[in-house]
Image 1: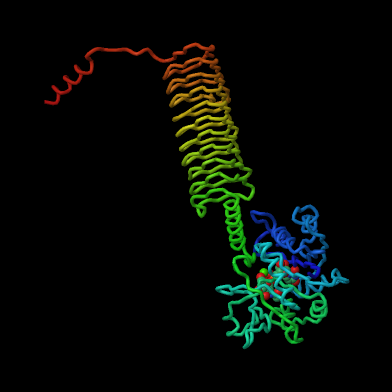
Image 2: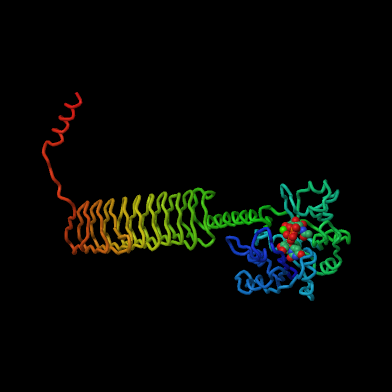
Length: 470
Ligand code: UD1
Ligand code: CA
């Protein structure tokens, strides 16, 4: 195989994306556009990668100096001081190609979705066909502003005509130019030097080298892309949103290939930073954000939002829960309809049930709060049971105070723990208590009004009321 040198055109500003940094630095969920281009090009093992920079070149150069995607390349940046067209940009790069013999891969920085496999395949095709110039084409319904691949009577490629220069018949062609070319280095140099700008945009079009090669009798091929989605270019914010969607779907497909089970992947959304281990199961409508890690054996039932959290092995998070900045220990169960707020740490085998809110709280192994509870600014010891309707009263209108609950404690239903307060190991709080003083270990605390009984009172009242009705 011949040696390969890559040239990425990245001098444009990308006005339509807003901001005033180079378009190649526009960020997708998987990094800057230029990084995605570099990552896929690494698959063809170029001996050198030339990046043509222009607008705000210093920002792009600074980025390339630290980007991990650039590490797989020997990069040289070349300045195109004025953006006079794609052909002019390549002309600026010619001095950097001096002395190189082989195949030059030319690409545009605003096409981030080409996969490594596609580019490898493309280069192999170019080499197999012994072609002087091969371009990656795709079928675009509608072809919009893309350059049309014009073919002759025998289906041979004749030229590329830019949309703005097309006649009405050419405008109907929907095989278009994706902006990736493989070109023999000995043809490229003179072809680019001879480009003219006599077209509607008064630009030096790189695409004109195709007609030049045809006229010289060189072998020219168009390699049609299997999946036209890969050719998507980024010109507008809506293009960027589309690219993000495609990257997200790819992330999910990769996770599926790695052994994560998605019941309804089309309804799920996850950031690129999210890690899901093989053997996890994800139900419908699950959103995973930030630095979330989901371990193996986890079941996420569905309709969940999880942000910057670690979900331990074999945890089940049930329908309708929200988890943020929390650590959930192995084999724990959360929800349905639980709100796990920042600063929560749940130990192994803990159980948080429906309508339970937990904030800045540590529940040690085996602790349970199964129904209708607020646990804020507290610690709960191993195997303690928090009854339904328990509230830690952590706020007096001015300050937050802590509640500490020991091991093996039983808190009866509908109790209020007025912080700061401590409940010792093994203590028992009677249902309906308002606890304002520390409870020693193994004590019973009763903090509720004594029940009064008035025998027959209800029957007497009923009889009186019935009499009045008549
Ligand atoms: C170009 C192609 C078109 C193709 C389309 C695919 C030409 C003449 N046309 O059109 O056939 O279908 O891409 O998206 O090549 N750039 C420079 N310097 C310049 C001009 C452009 O570096 O002077 C860079 C831009 O930053 C961009 C890339 O080249 O990354 C493409 O330029 P753009 O103006 O977007 O070309 P299109 O009109 O989209
Ligand atoms: Ca473009």
